[in-house]
Image (tube, one colour):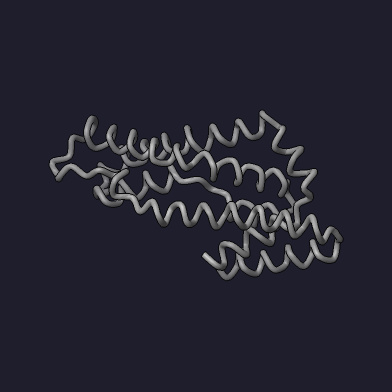
Amino acid sequence: NILLFFLVFGMSATVQVDDLKHRLTNKFAIGAGVTMQFLFMPFLGFCSVMVFTNFGLTYAMGITLLVLTSSPGGSYSNWWCSLFNADLALSVAMTSVSSILSLGLLPANLFFYSWLTYSVVLKEEEEDVNVVGALDFNAIFITLGVVLGAILGGLFVGYKHNNPHFHKRANQFGSVCGIAL
C-alpha cells in the first residue's frame, strides 16, 4: 500500500488542480469511463467465465475473474498516462470517480454476476458461497482510502508547490514507485 500511495501521490502532484476540475466537468469522458468500468468490464468478465468454464476454469478462478473485472482501475492507468504523455488529469479524474463509485458498484456487480453465473446459468453443485459476504471489505476500503488519500494529498502538495521542477520530481518519484510496485 505504501508504493501504491506514492505512485498515485506522485502522479496526482503533477496534475494542475484547474486541469482536474476541467476534466471532471467532461461528462462524456467520465460517463464513458464509468460505463466501461462498471458495465462492460464486469459483463466481459461474466462472458469470459462462461466461455472458459468449458475449458477447465474452476469455481475459484471464476470468482477471482469476476472480482478482477468488477474492481475499479486507475492507479496504473495514471502511471501509463504519465509514461506516454497522455491526459494525466483525465486519468486522475477517472480514478477518483471510479474509486468512489466502486464502494457500491463493486459489491453490486459481484453479487449480480456471481449469482447469474453460478446460481442461474451453471447451477454449480458446490456449496452456496456468498461472494459479497466473503469479500474482505476492510482491505478494499483501505486500498480505496489509500488511493483517494494519495490523490487528495498529491493535488494539495502540487497546488502548494506549483512549479515545473517540483512537478517533474513528483512525476519521477511516482514513476519509480510504479516500477517498484
